[in-house]
Amino acid sequence: MSIPQISIVGRPNVGKSSVFNWLAGRRLAIVDDMAGVTRDRMTFLMQEKGRYFEIVDTGGIGINDVDELDEEIEQQIELGIQGADVLMFVVDARDGVTALDQTVARRLRNIKKPVFLVANKCDGQNWEIESSEFFALGMGQPVVCSAKNNRHKQAVLDKILENLPEFETAEDSELEAPEMKLAIVGRRNVGKSTLINTITESERMIVSPVAGTTRDSVDVRIEIDGKSFVAIDTPGLRKGKSVRTDIDFYGTHRAHRSIRHADVVLMMFDCSQRISKVDRKLCSYIESYYKPCILVVNKWDLMADHMPTERWANYLRDNFGSLWNVPIAFITAQDGRNVKKMLNHAQMLYKQSLDRVSTPRLNKIIRSALDHHPPPIANRRRPKIYYATQIGIQPPTIVLKCNDPDAFPKSYRKYLLGVLRDTVNFGEIPIRMVLEKRGSSDAQNELDQQRVRVSGENQDGHKD
Image 1: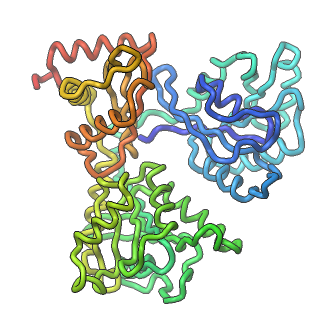
Image 2: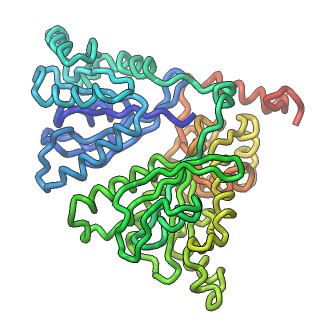
Image 3: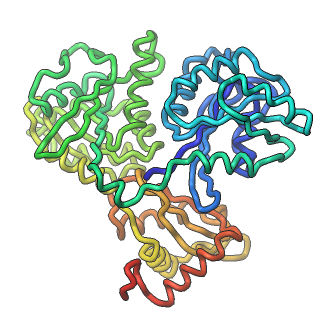
């Protein structure tokens, strides 16, 4: 299963960012007495009692932003809520129940996800007694704490663990083959709706030379060769300064949401047009969410006789250097040329994103990479990696336990990612690699890894 997300929500100035930093154990989010400092979401990967999860800081619900960015902030909050597995509703114990707290509570009651209440700023016993008034919000008994004075942190963490989704077992995953969700994105008039119509062999979407014909994200269920999946047609995006109407704004919002919820993204380009700022922003957004992607060059029938595919491929590689491993497809959506081949490739990427690598194999790969090219010396000593393990899928998330995460430079992390791509089945999809400092609770895990290294056994107990 993917890494569970716990989104921290509430009205402005109740201490959400303070709680986020407190749980993370480091100062990541800006904390200020002025309401509305947090605008974008911030995430941090945590481990507690053998479970991994991400905490997500969000902006204040109901903020009146001084720069008139209320809609943009609300968009980020909504993404945080929709993408969460668990919601932590934070209130200010000193202020008591406010009208805006009640508004937030009504909004969260309509969401079919676990929600628990945290009363922050309980700096003493008296405040903890006063917090009982929050029962009126209908969210059950609040967990009382104080991020500022480090009170009852374990109670908050225990509440998170209590609400986390259960581990997915092999039996659960085999009950029903999940449908791949395929988001089709790109700027205006690159042929997204034409591609949908070609795939479905019907006039499912309105196709017009007028840019911006599609104004909402549309889900279309498709079956090819006995395999079903959901294709999501999205509105074409415009430059930020060209977003002038509510329709444009919400079209952008829904396109971003489709990317976030997709399993694989088809990023479409018109071969007769140069790469634009909108294209770069979309690719950056896809990359930031670790989404498997295919760069799709459409209308290739217009260029096939004038330009070799290598030239356009190099053009893409030059503009998107960080996506060097992403596959490129050259298609003509109107007549279906190479479309089925592209969809088969998307299915392959989806399967890669669901794959797992055993801990013994990962450690063998990392150990070999360290022997072949040791990390550079930092602060007069060479940093160490003790062991590696995969903790999640979609994206494949690999944690490397080490003595000092900051001692590994970006270039060396890139080297390790390259080794992983070359040796495991993640060659064309994003890998999220996290370097994490080994704690005392990891001592037994390290002993287990040493046992595996000495015995040379794989997970089935057979010799490698």
